[in-house]
Length: 152
Image (cartoon, rainbow, N blue to C red):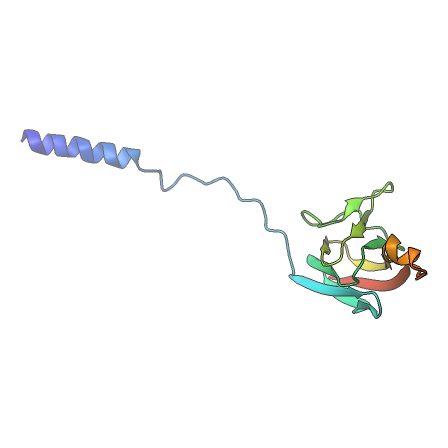
């Protein structure tokens, strides 16, 4: 009889120590509506491909610098002032919009678009290294223009 009482007490303690199945878990933050990613390549000779890109809200656009020199990306018409989490190589400028300065060759810059609209931008590929200029190879920076259209 004593062992039955002991067993019941142990069983009761085990049941009480289990998490309450009816307890409510804290509400999870709503998921952000992400829509994947799209890639734009930057080449010094041929420019940006594609020049015009249509994406849905929540899409991350990734620029891959294949221009063999640093590039910058500046939005020229409508500033991007809000983006999804953690833009890569983009920082806020003095007006509160995102710009990417000096994205090195082989590196990427990316930003997630959350606001509907048309965003015109300019990619500037820097000139070659100083040593090349000293050899008499005069080269100017190249600008390429593109457009990102963010639909619903």
